[in-house]
Image (cartoon, rainbow, N blue to C red; front, side):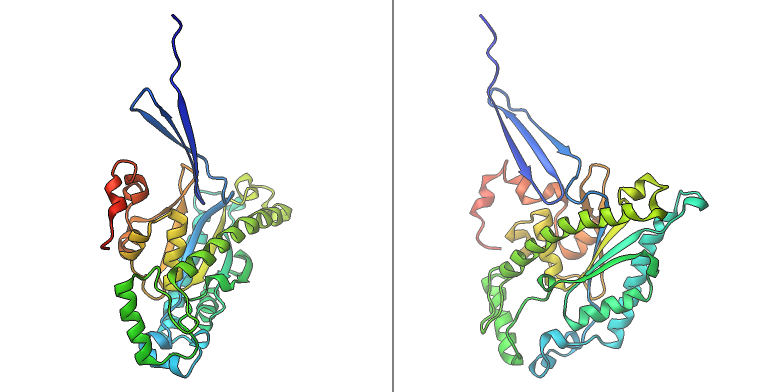
Amino acid sequence: MSRVEPIRRTWLIRQPNVTLTISKSLCSKRSIATEKKNDFLPGIKRIILIRHGESLGNIDERAYATTADWRIPLTNLGREQARLAGKKVSSYLNQELNGKEESQATKGKVYFYVSPYLRTRQTLREILREVDVDCIIGIREDPRIAEQQFGNFQHHAEIQDNKAQRVDFGRFFYRFPSGGESGFDVYNRVSGFIGTITRDVQNIREELQREETLESTDAQQDGQDVTICIVTHGLTLRLFLMRWFQYTVHEFERSYNPKNGRVVVLDLTKSGRFNLSEMDRIAMGFPLYREQERFQLMNDYSILDKSNW
């Protein structure tokens, strides 16, 4: 009698930064998962996310009653925090010099995205004071990485009541009244922004390949020395990470904003995906990669019954 081959089912799970191929045999309990090398952002070495420095609204929320949110400036401390963030960005670009002969030594390149809010633009202005101008290959303002909308001029007591309601209702789905947004709204626009990055990366690679100064190093021609730097807001930053790493709503609800001026780094690993450092995960309350609920769900369906977060 001829041997009957087991029936196999294959699922392709596509993520922003990695493709997992899972093949499961119906005749066996074993399953195989292999990671395919990243082709989502080819040539990009790291992604840096920066929350703006301390703003006037961070120290006195009554400022929003007389000044439009998008016009709130940095404080002097916020400018100092931004300069420190710029030094960190510069240090990452200087890392590209390590291990190269002097004749081939070239700093990494960086492409900036910035929210149109005054406090993020001022943060970027201070960052640029610390970054070699020859390293900068582009700067783009994008409204999709702006702050969550709370309405227009904000009455302090009313906003405090709304924020208290948000805690009870859930921060992801709570929508601020009078034209405000929910976290879900911000998540959706950040998702579209990620799509823009993928298209921009191709243009970046083509531009770098045209530069004669990069023709001597294969890694540089592939754009491997390019850093994407995004200057944004605390909530938007977390929702970017939620979208990127496919955190659940439950995991988002347990997270919290990074401090003003915080530099959050996603480094490209040898497996071809971008990794959030353990320090940054702990600082914002996100789980480790393999401890995420999306992986646990396959072995624990009771997660679907969660209601009290």
